[in-house]
Structures are given as C-alpha cells and as structure tokens.
Image (cartoon, rainbow, N blue to C red; front, top):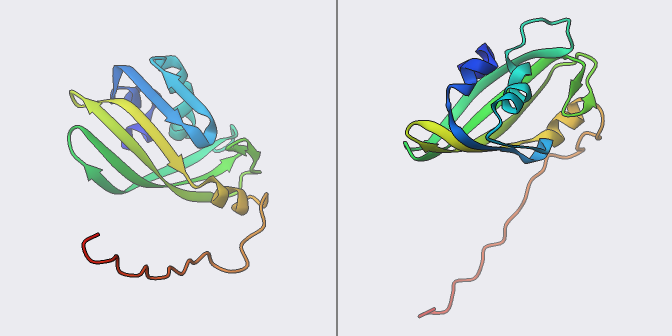
Length: 149
C-alpha cells in the first residue's frame, strides 16, 4: 500500500509483466496494460490538495494468504477530491473499507480483484439516504440434520 501512495511507477513494480486487474464496482478491467493501470491508480499518490484528484490514505487491516495468493483487507479515505467513484464529491472527506484478492507468480501480482463498499461512500456524499436502523440480520438455527445424513 505504501507503493500505491508513493507513485504509480512504484506500485507497478509489484505487478508481473502479464497481469489481470479487475475493479468491478468501478467497472475497471485492465489486462497487460501498464499505462492504463498507472492511470487508474495515479490519484492514490497525489500530493496536491488543489488539483481535484484528492489526497488518499490506504491502510492494511489484515492479510490472509501465502506466497501464492491472498486477501488484503484495507481501509481507504480521501479528501479534497472533486469526484469520487464518478460522483461529485466537492472535496468532502469520505472513507470506506474493501479487499483486494491477489494471485502471485514469483512474488509479483498476476491477478488482482478489488471489492469496495461504494454504497457507504455514496451515503457519505449524500447520494443515498442514510440507513435509519443499523443493518442486522437474525439467523434462525437450522434444525439438526437427520441422523445419518
């Protein structure tokens, strides 16, 4: 994550020459195009609060995996952005959580699939009403399966 905040070039050193990058919530699908990937992640390393790209922060919460594949759970926040996820943001502070699933080959990312809670961001920006009650689910206990099942 430090590389993403440093520069697109630094982040690209973690990707194999042949890679597949997917960010389904943002409808970004990039295969083997380093210039397109650099453009997609450029805002994360922005240091100018006045250019509209925003100032971003990424924090790894947890990593579950090994040298072959893993899930990176992260927190992300931004401020001073004109647009976030295609929605006018007016520079407001937003934050959300997400996860990146990685597949590695020789220590380099060959596949990345990103999932993020964009509904939470839309609510923070005022595009969706806030929930009146916290989302909770009550699960009924399933009956025990019949013996021998």
